[in-house]
Image (cartoon, protein in one colour):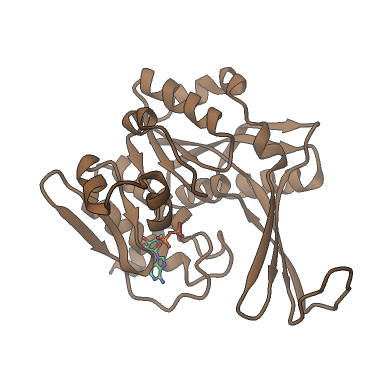
Amino acid sequence: MKITVVGSMSTDFVVTTKVKPNQGETVFGEKFATAFGGKGANQAVAASRLGMDVAMVGAVGKDDFGTAILDNLVKNGVAVTGVERVTHAESGSAHIVLYDNDNSIIVIPAANNEVKPANIEKFTDQLLTSDLVILQNEIPQETNEAIIDFCWQNGIQTLLNPAPARSIAKEYIEKLTYLTPNEHESAIIFPDQSRSEVLAQYPNKLIITLGAMGAIYHDGIKEEIVPAFEVQPVDTTGAGDTFNAAMATALLQGLEMSAALRFANLAAAISVQGFGAQGGMPTLEKMKEQSQ
Ligand code: ADP
């Protein structure tokens, strides 16, 4: 089964400090680390580790960061022929400062904003040979809309993980196969309806993740909560990314929605026990070990 992820790739630059600099001030911090990120790349890596045939579509700059991002995808078994290297923008990055109980993040989308609807022609073959196309909200909205339209016209299944939150027209929700917001994103997409109303409106399509509570959907007859696994999380970055990739993997392998969500909850529970978005993402072997 082939999954194509059309989305973002970036490098996270993470600084840990005890003192916050005031305006114009320089302080000494504690630690610095880089990590691979971008919701698109994270979901591609997670699906590949779970045994799917995965292709990434998107853009990085012609800089060293772009080269490292591609190397990391290849190392994780993700095909990168659909990733464009652009000269007019640098690779995407996130600049994260961790204070005691606090953090601040500046995201520079850069090349991720260069994935334009006009580029779709360059990767229609990738889309047409996919069993499922996964999208997130870190590339331009009009590109997501063009891909949803294209896939809908060509009978290709689509999953939109609407993170970070932004609203989406009902027309596109109708054309999606799956929509997977967390609670906060769901409230932004459906501001005028209760959670139960929207779940009933989109049975087996709308899956709302509930953090440590698991996930909820409507099976056509009733609402069902699929509870999360109880674990001690060390880093919940990328939990949603692992969840989405695992859910997609399970559904493509023919599991029913509730079994697919159980599989997704397990993958995400394993991922929150490792550091960094991609650090804890499980392989299929690890999943088998844990489910015994
Ligand atoms: P996001 O990371 O996108 O905000 P959630 O916080 O809803 O999304 O988490 C996504 C999924 O990750 C949940 O549905 C659950 O399966 C898993 N998860 C998140 N936090 C925990 C936790 N503390 N313990 C166990 N599983 C978790």
